[in-house]
Image (cartoon, rainbow, N blue to C red; front, side, top):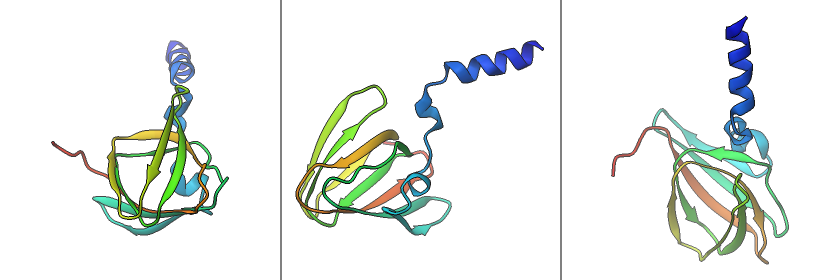
Length: 121
């Protein structure tokens, strides 16, 4: 009995972000798997101005901006990040749960390489 209670308590105490799904599951209309192996998953992402994603999780990733765009990123703790990219910009991000919104006037088009193994600096 105590094991069942402890298990239920653990689930209640976990932040909801721990249950966030893959972006391919939450927003399959925007994310396309280009390539996947045991080391990485390469995603292509496209959206239009005003479009928003559902909450989802990315492992550590590298993003390459195919085109210029502007996004608002909402983190589970309520923090808002504004991101603006020019075509050709590249950025690294540690693991992250977020909701993204295209707040610019141009479509978003990126290639993301999600890392499946730990990266040592």
